[in-house]
Length: 519
Length: 117
Image 1 (cartoon, rainbow over the protein chains, first blue to last red):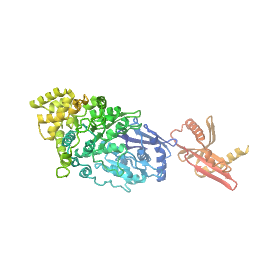
Image 2: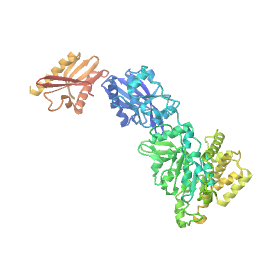
Image 3: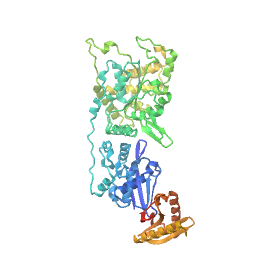
Image 4: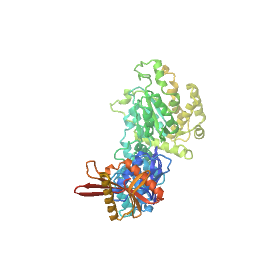
């Protein structure tokens, strides 16, 4: 007369397990669902009643009480249909309780008993998996999407009678195995290669340093110098994602409804390049029922903001939390959700509104005031959180084409990525006992512990401090960068060469704070 | 007795005969209390059944059962609760049925609709 069935409920990005308790007792026939169901869940009773009858089962004409436990969190979505229906069938004795207890269920029911696919299936499945669930009965329409979870047994069902046949042992189903996933190699090769970028060796180097420890980077240069082109190629030199990272990205895309139709795991690092007219909400995520925005969608990948100062100020300030805490919190009346946002920010801007400031041949037409205005859009705190500032200049003709008239090609993405992967593994190894993985996450006490400077380096840093009147924070940034550069060179200790390179990545903002003086 | 009351009476007689033929035990007829009225109260096996009978002469006003609206159901339920409480029957299985009867010239048609709430 009483049954317990396991299912889940989506909370932000995570899913919680929900136990569907069903009790059938004497009294006037009725069906009540308690445990904070919203309308879509409450409507389940009409679908279940019809589905069970039309599939040839008895819908008990008794007093049915369904409780969705924990009863204090709001439940929404149509995926509760199947677990509630199974709960009713177990409580009325049509299915044995012992069998059903081994599985978690989710799925929407049609009035004829068919089981329909639901939204966010992969997010739900991952959540249940993380809570220790290993066997899952789900709609056949979601099987490809969820089959990427290789450590789960999934049993797709097309009709409620399949569930009964499976659990009663009449017609047991085999666990579904998806097609093997594409190797990450294949995925990377579909991208663009740094080999296509002629010249710009210094910028390529800076991007490689940035990639080696997920440092944020700001590129400043005139239009057409290749900022966008190089940013697009950045995901290609980032290390391939681990299986867990792929799952997390896939989960966010599933919640945003942006998974490709054929489903499958997202194995390529995200590259998000929102237009500068984007609203703060679209950047962070939101809506009455919160959905992830561009920042969480760039999780483990690159968020490229071209025309950085053109973004509205509020949108830019939204970036502060993810840059600091690697997550983004959205508070709405219905719920507060936190999305992970381990992003690598790549910002690009012109040196001045007309774009020609600092150009060797073209003349800048902006007034000093305009330049100051333009640059002041990026607040100091935000600029401080970007580790690398680098200036880009247009490539001279000699570097584009060699004397024989051929395009010059150097340094492809694969070589760059290999170096990055080595540098990252060195860092992960070093910070095994800490709660961080990369140099960009170093905090002041950890910098002291892991980034000792020799005398020569220290002197150099002191000189830079005085010449550029650096802040304490920029000083720490330089040490962090020097650490990354040393790792990239596979050197144990930071030396003056590394510090010098790190200082060169910090010059723009500090030196040009004054505006046109440098032009 | 006016014509309409007579028709109702006829319908109820018909319904009772039908229920007995189906093995129902009739407990009460035309049960009245301050909250309303229930036409027939019967037992089918271990289930307590409350039955509303609707009789009509023709289809010009729609099917008889269509006149059992949600307001009518509410009245029925209120009376039902009173009855259940009065006799201390809370732990029993119970349901509400409608029997619709069409008394046409060519004959009488009866339709039993179970569990309307």
